[in-house]
Length: 339
Image (cartoon, rainbow, N blue to C red; front, side, top):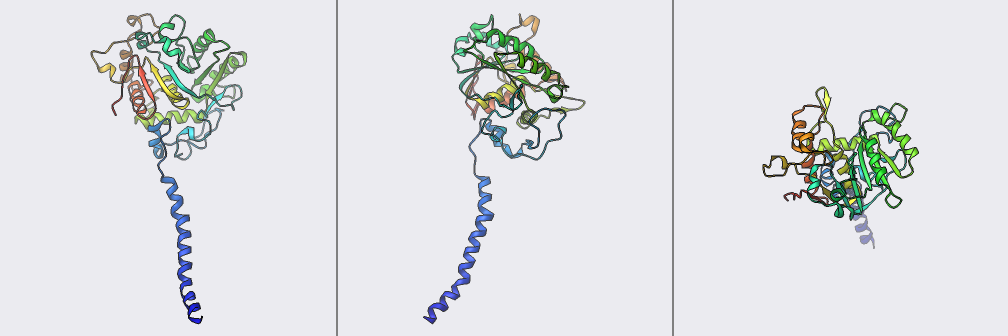
């Protein structure tokens, strides 16, 4: 018995050491392991893959009450993982609290390009669960090519009035549309000094058929930084800015609300360099190419400008990359990204 007890006492320090070591391992190494587990790609998978490099603010206000402070610390995840609602940051204009809530299995995203007139895909577009349009692109007179239904229309702060008129023309009780307007903080201020917001608020208050939404400062910053991370292009240039297109905002929204995005009328970034490719008007609702200019002429004209211009080619290259990770297909013209 004395020998047995002695052996037990001799082993006690060893047992204590094992327990302490195991405890330290759990506290130090196990939590660290949790942060490096591979996460399933999010809708914006290319962005998610670079998530540790993206600088998404955590201290930006949820309403645009005026000039915002500089961005806060880096947030390591895509915007839509911050909330149970993937569309967090698209808020009702009247309440500034209610997020847009919409989930669609198949979305038809209709471009404003003249290419959409080449396929007569209107009936196919109308079959999609949700139809997304941009700015003031009309439906009346173009039904054969662009369909008749509208679920969501995304508009820039400079053209939302025209977009509202278009929505009103096609609205019905069975087809309640939503208007999502984006714009810089100075136009969307809610302190009485934001002209776009003031006009939006009045329209939203008077309208019974259209739901009006706007992007918060936080969402605007995220979308802006997403462009910079994905393209490698800085928007702040010498003595000016580069513009984001409504197409950029629309595609980001579509990836967050649609399982499958069918894009109609959007050409690839390589289209303008292909001498055999069909030329199209910049907007399908302009009379002729002669008066409006071609899409490629507009794109190359933008490329030549150092500021106050879009970078359409860069945006389309990003869309091509996203289509490898998210279910995005392109129609009229069709283009298949290389794997």
